[in-house]
Length: 417
Ligand SMILES: [Zn+2]
Image (cartoon, rainbow, N blue to C red; front, side, top):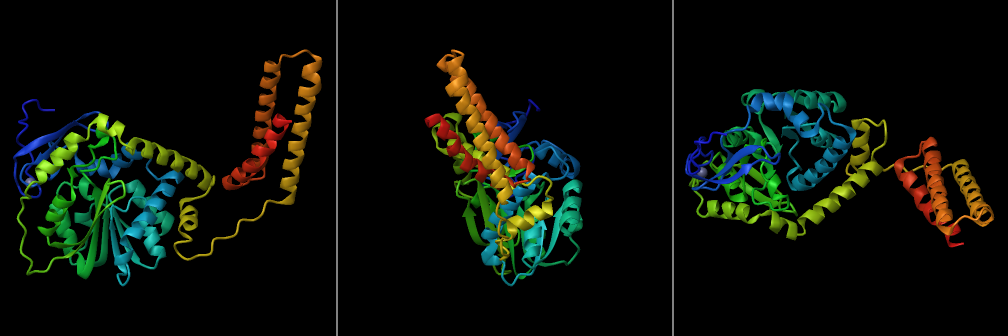
């Protein structure tokens, strides 16, 4: 970092108002590297100044690897992204009907585009990352254009609905991106923009700023930027945890006056929220606990939902089935032979344990502690045996949990006896 940087001035002009008068919000990124984030004194827009990387090569090749450690999505990433796609569908429901032609900017692994395609929309995705874009086209049969929005949108091409989820904050010129998208909307079309909210306090203060996010918005700065670039605001929403800001926009009326680029009080508001979000305040809030809880719940439900060897398309078809009105196939009952072999294994184990505790350990003068230790080891062996047996019958993990749920109280019986 350039030590001669003046902390009241930005190198890059404000994308909203053109100003250079700023204050510094943060000097560190999520990864702990030097990253200067500034907020404009006139309008409250925040950005990385100077820029941390060269955007184009970063997004075509490095980005997904830096983010997820993989060039194509792994099953757990497909599952997570599929669940996010269902959330996003719920957010845009009111604007979907009667809007068949959809553009998804930054379509990633294609999970959201595939959901809309399955709902009968004609969807085009644009994705700069080659690995993810090819994967989406090949796996889901999607129309994905590899590259950047400005290069991949045909002149005069228009859509009924455009979605741009968590992409605008990565662009070098968000105002120009919104203007380009406003021009690609049909009359009556809608643009859905979602970005991280710079006022969010649900994350650790150390993870607030990220090298990949060149800009940070709140509702006021994003709304003003949209209105100054040919759009009008239909709806503004924050996610339940305050972390995401979703805005639904329409082409502006030519008669609408251009709003002023300065936003009274917005810099003080943004700087105040960021300064107040200290590690201590965060530790004393309920957010770290809720985040840890939802992470644990997510890991367990991923383990249950994922089926080894299943490809992304089969996984999403299964996940999206109820949303698409498809009957969920009834789970086949466990074969009687499986139940019988599990019961036989259990009875044999109980017999061995009883014999060990009542006869062998007592006859050989074992202490009660040693007896209990071996008894518990035998119990563990029984549980492992039941799981191994269930796996050898190729049970789904959900079935495995069911068998485990039945076996656990049964295993406790000898202990009580
Ligand atoms: Zn500004």
